[in-house]
Length: 517
Image 1: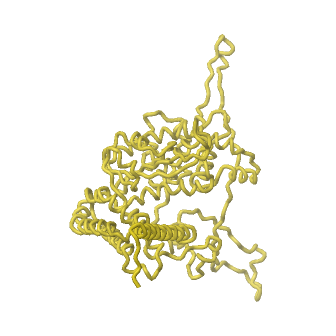
Image 2 (image 1 turned 60 degrees about the vertical axis):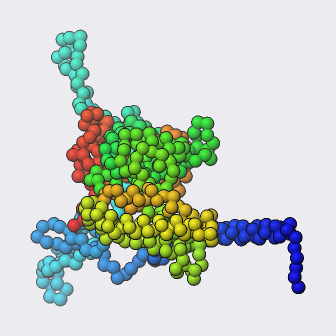
Image 3 (image 1 turned 135 degrees about the horizontal axis):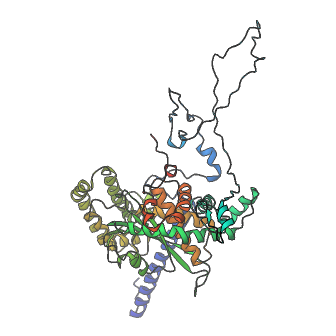
């Protein structure tokens, strides 16, 4: 039987089919987003192709315990030296050793069989790791003031001479270099908010309010640490390869803005080729490109970033991040059924990116000139072939632009000019992971303290984070280095500040991390 339909009915059917296809695509998109959201919430976050088993933090002790791992031991030789045995985290060679003697009294040194005198033939040795909790005390600085007895008797003027004394970190305050350094390290390195520190101080019998601690942090950051920050920025801008990244921060009391509005913490840092690494944070209210443009005004080199458009508006050579490309294809794989993954376009895209990273690992020990040559001969042709494949796959009519795979292909094609810039210089890194690792301490801290109260607090936080992260990059202990700065900078002239930078000659050995042999 033949069914005849009119032209208007045919057009209606076509419209229904188109609407059906559009709805099916929309359902598929939402299903992908749901699976991806679940994976991000509950799955492993590692970007490795073979992800390790996700650790349950509540069972960390049970998961990491291994009775077969030997404890660190100490070896005695003709001089006092401790030899490391085992993993780096078990190295105790930098710790002092206190010896506690357990002996018998003279009257007890009698043989239980014959009654003869006993002598020491050997020692049983048991070693323990002793923990001494932090001690809090008041240090009272008493400065002697002198006058002349003869002048007091014979004249109407008596000179006053005072003994020398270092300037305090905050005049008229109980704040000491060690106290301020401790508060900063706890908040910005260990992610302990001030209200938790307040409770910790109370348990030690010290009643120090969070407002007082906040005042100390802001005051010392703007009085002393900013001087180091300014010089670190000058050092940063002398390099011709930098990395940049940004993340959100909530600041409650910004003029003309709601408390819920997003502000941003921008990060700029040196690349891996430098011997004097610098990591700097900068707080700004918005994500406008004028902020990095102003910060990098005197910089004209290579800038490694993610695909954020604001970076591409700067007067620099933008270098893209291949890790972000791989991440997009990884997301596309996560939303697919396992039996659909082998041989899929998402799998092929991920495999291509993995190939680039594998080559970079093989070339890690090469000089920049050698790496540039190998990249030109081996990696660059693979990259060009990858982009040709991505462009043709993105044009395929069954790849939906809003799907995870469509986004991965579109992102790769859009970022091609910047991703190919990595082949301009052998010193450039293939990803911006270095910047992401540096901004991670701020992201982790944000999960604990959640927001900044004011722009002044956010700016002070950016300064402190900069000093701490730069210190760590240069192999310094954050607490010791901050304490050294607060002892030194208030008593140092402007011309002497270069010597107290993390690589300066004035930095004492106590600030440096122990070097493992």
